[in-house]
Amino acid sequence: MRKSFEARFLGQKRSTKNPFDLSQDQIVRYSRQLILKEVGGKGQKKLMSSKVLIVGAGGLGSPAALYLAAAGVGRIGIVDSDKVDLSNLQRQIIHSTRTIGRPKAVSAKDAIQALNPEVDVVTFEERLEPENALDLLKGWDFVIDGSDNFRTKFLINDACVIKGLPFSHAGVLRFIGMTTTVIPRQGPCYRCLIREAPPPGAVPTCQEAGVLGTVPGVMGAIQATEAIKFIIGAGNLLVGRVLYFDALSMRFDQFELRRNPKCPSCGDRPVIKDLSQVDYGNVCRVKAE
Amino acid sequence: MKADRSIDIRGEVCPYTFVKSKLALEELESGQVLEIILDHDPAVENVPRSMEADGHKVLSVKKVGKDWKILVRKA
Image (cartoon, rainbow over all chains, first blue to last red; front, top):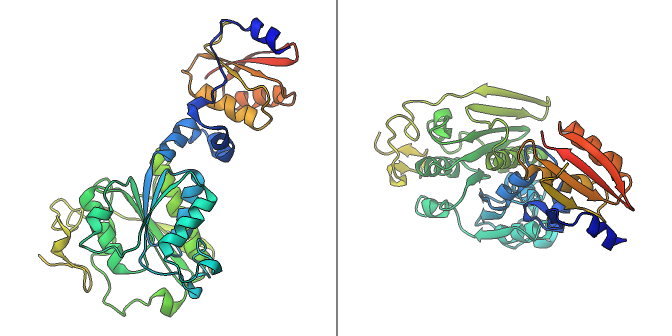
């Protein structure tokens, strides 16, 4: 039967190879997004050759890393110097009771590879510091700010703006989350929103004020969505807009954010040309000012 | 009608019949014709319907022995 079939179509350009050179497993694994017009084979190949760095494998970084891995991002970097603690597990869902005491970067890597062994995971068991930031950020297509402190947030912003590297910012506290996407010089940056960090103690941390685990869950999932959209070039990014989420009233609001021409980081005459020009010890103020 | 490309997805079942057809069509230029050869009976209805829902033109659906041959022109 097969033979007669082959004979009937002899001479035509036949192929049993999968389109876009995707393996059978890849077609099955990614089938629900492959059939989206905005993804397709082309978008999937872009995802598979993309590199995303996640700073912080905590409440935001956990869902972001898992969704990016699930979508098939080719390389994921995890920067985190902490070890998994029992008190993390209420929201940091990439870790588990079994991994308490292990470095978070390693615990996250194991969870990512259990979910999708195709992802190449690079771990950095260190803190992002002014001294290593530009090196750590080298070679990535997109950065997820999953940090839990103003110092690291300003550092990510300043370093990404210097390097022209797009990133997703997010912050959470209690039942509130906010997020925005920064494409340096195409839209405003985090310093256009807040010029410098509030003085230490002025804003409570999640440790002091608490946070509902699902709030960073929602925000981290949005950050991963922005990374995916950026990579495949689909839709509108959260650039020039801040999305504000209140879980108690269950409302999303957004406000417009304009680029500040006088911004020390991304303004017309930027002052922060290298990270040594900022005092990251206190409120992340620019020394030259 | 001569196809610009042919994809043999005999042995595939839904939804992979559609996933692979869609991917193969994505690799073609607008106006080109894809031939899909399949043997999963429910796909004979599902694949053309999905293709049309995406705006492509189903040119023919023919039974060839135990198999089916579907021709689709890319929108």
